[in-house]
Length: 272
Ligand SMILES: NC(=O)c1ccc[n+]([C@@H]2O[C@H](COP(=O)([O-])OP(=O)(O)OC[C@H]3O[C@@H](n4cnc5c(N)ncnc54)[C@H](O)[C@@H]3O)[C@@H](O)[C@H]2O)c1
Image 1 (tube, protein in one colour):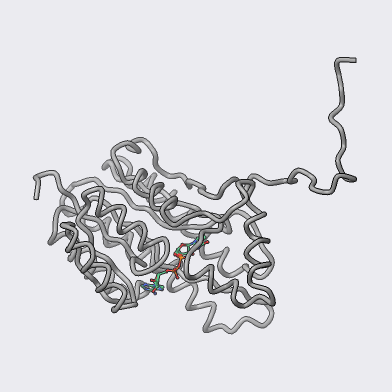
Image 2 (tube, protein in one colour):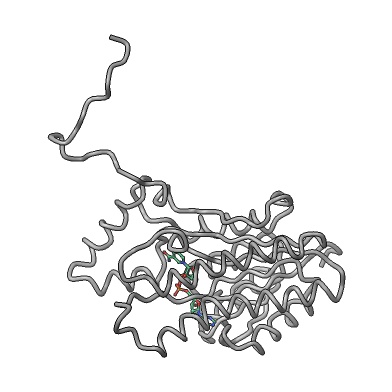
């Protein structure tokens, strides 16, 4: 281990965006405490990373449990000084607001919102005790700033963590601590693929979502991992308090170019 090696906590590391990010950060030289509720997939990841000469430990647990966050930061610090805390673990579900079960609302808030808060607090405690600096990244969503029918609870949880990182950035910035959010668009992950399966025609559901992004495709998990790797690197040393949207321009859309030839309007010729 080199003297400048640092560790990171990554939650939700066993699948999708978290899995791609764990692989990317490990390849970049971070020693990792990988957190997830899926013990089997987590062990597989950690085994794979260690076999490839990386340094990683598994922390099996639920991020809504404060003790799990304390345990994961401690596990990271045992590997190397903590340089980053990356919250990816989250769940998504759509509801009609007037009938949503209270237990489901509380579960979404516990994982998506409080899971990020408890983890960020533990990382801040580590850095306060050592006087060191580090970076907090939370995984938000384009849903934090844009609305889709049925996604109200999910959107509330994601908007709240963007508020959290803004506040951490301004409160702890003087110590060199940075806080940022990443807002993915539609990314091809097991969770998203499973959601297509609930449509009458899963292929149609997938094509519909692909067309929402001007890049005309779903994003790859490695594309979010690359953004997170950048944000916790020294290349991003003056970036804090913001949300980096990685969505193939999905959230820039007011109106897409017409596909119906009869709806095309020629641009106005102002040159006579
Ligand atoms: N896939 C997308 O299109 C998309 C878009 C925007 C934001 N996101 C966000 O990205 C994150 C990852 O999503 P994904 O699509 O990769 O999901 P995924 O289901 O493929 O992976 C999520 C991982 O988190 C773990 N996890 C879930 N709840 C947990 C808990 N309470 N404690 C610990 N681990 C837990 C799961 O076991 C799983 O391994 C989520 O926060 C999600 O809201 C995803």
